[in-house]
Length: 257
Ligand SMILES: Nc1ncnc2c1ncn2[C@@H]1O[C@H](COP(=O)(O)OP(=O)(O)OP(=O)(O)O)[C@@H](O)[C@H]1O
Image 1 (cartoon, rainbow, N blue to C red):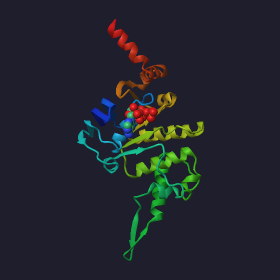
Image 2: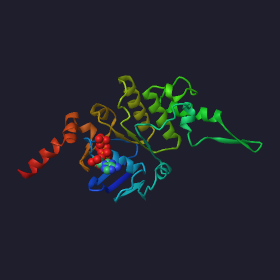
Image 3: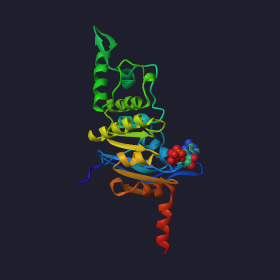
């Protein structure tokens, strides 16, 4: 039996002046699945995830979470509905500790004799717990983020998403610019998220990574969804064929024959 839909978008249209970045795109994400989002440059991937993140408002189309219609008018709306997007820049503060980053903007404040103060001990305890859930190994919770490796930083960014109880985690090219060992770590974090029943959208140009961690693959090309593939029933060559448009051209030829 397939898992129920966590999130769906239907007939999504986004125009920038004369450019149609998304041309009636359907997108869906099941509970506990990793959905890869792939496509050539300019295919519409960033526009789609910015819409998911509440940074863009679509011109047309509907979005549902757990079967209920939603409309994001700001990134805050998306966070409040449990959709956390981790952009490539990660939005971490280098000169702050791991725990402070995980709790950035959501600090735990306790009052003693009516005076509010930051409950650092609790924030550290919870940060450790969140990192352990992901198998993220860091030197010390008090380390500044700027001293961490690229993979560890991704781990901190994901832990921050878990800290707001995000159910949908969108990751924009999380393995780009990472060394091989670091890529492995990030792929393991993604698998850990799936084991916890989270839904993940993974944008990636790396077909090997996509084949390793995704359950399904959405392929965009020139603003349209041209493929929705089951990873287990697809070869890397087929995925590349969809990305480059070769698969589409072949299909059109067969239809015309
Ligand atoms: N803010 C914007 N203003 C004008 N045009 C835009 C804007 N954002 C995206 N576009 C256009 O929309 C189309 C889709 O772009 P988008 O960035 O979503 O593609 P992408 O698949 O993420 O590409 P890449 O892999 O190169 O990042 C492109 O033609 C792009 O030039």
